Length: 76
Image (cartoon, rainbow, N blue to C red; front, side, top):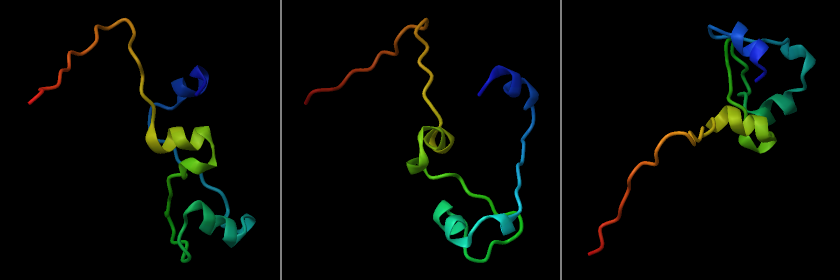
């Protein structure tokens, strides 16, 4: 997300579009229910692209300037 936009979003943001403009088959494929209740929302499936995958799962931020965590296995 560009830093200009990220600075503006200090609170939750909601984006809405008129459902009349989108075919019902596409809405169902995206993940909406058949009833399309008011206020219904979906998280995009990660199969739609790298940004949808980021929105679904987030990302791991590697802090290369921090020491690594110690982890070991016990061998029986």
